[in-house]
Image (cartoon, rainbow, N blue to C red):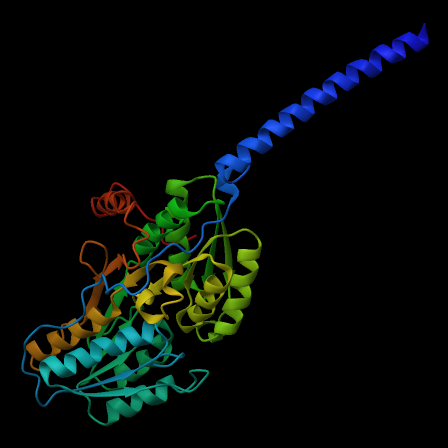
Length: 375
């Protein structure tokens, strides 16, 4: 009796096994004829852009004014003039102003750790330059007393606010542009795993992170953003450390992240190198960084968050010329509405989602979406 029950059970198991095998065989046939198996959203997004496209952003310049006799000095931040980002954009504005207005310009670069920022600002003020520009929030501490010491010299600082009659503070709503490229990242990511690399874990770069995370969440609340900062204050080496950025990016891509946004100055080169090697997507910052990488890497640049530092520098010098060597001072803000913030279209990877991005942009301008500036 027990033996018969065992045979009946064995027969039932055999039949179930055949059914399972048949189902497995059918699934296999569907896979071979239809492409990828399983849920396609688990496959990472890859580099799909076109190479060799012309810049989508309007170049700086084109105004007419007579600035002969005026002198403008600029001190860059760490990373050098060829950082393909913040410094390069500032210098582009300076050079365009020299060409269009005939002003005399002087460009200085700090030492590797930036410890002589103040010395360079002071040297330009002592030499009688009409306008002295510090490129970056890290000039705040040194520029504040120097501007007070030289009240007849005009000063300008980028990404920080100094309350003084002779200082023009050029700031940007970086969170707004970061929101839009965050939305783009979420729309293009196939894994729902997205990365952010910051140069220094401070208040300014956190605005990029905050906007980016908000943009991702607007499109896909379930997506995860992994955040990694390359340095902690007061160390600012993270803005000029592409090797560390590459190591971080390599790890992110290995973890299934398929889109990474950086706000790390010259360190971004390391991200782009990793993206090209791993066939994953990267988002640039400040400048149109698609135009600053080689053609083999261009297909991996999804977009860049444009912070028109070049335009801010150029416009400030124009105002200096129009004001006969004087500026009104105060805070000048660049945002989506003014065109001081935006995103690049080079490579064509945003073509199919640009209508959505433009709608989000208008909602921000209209105040329907309030973008956070802190994570």
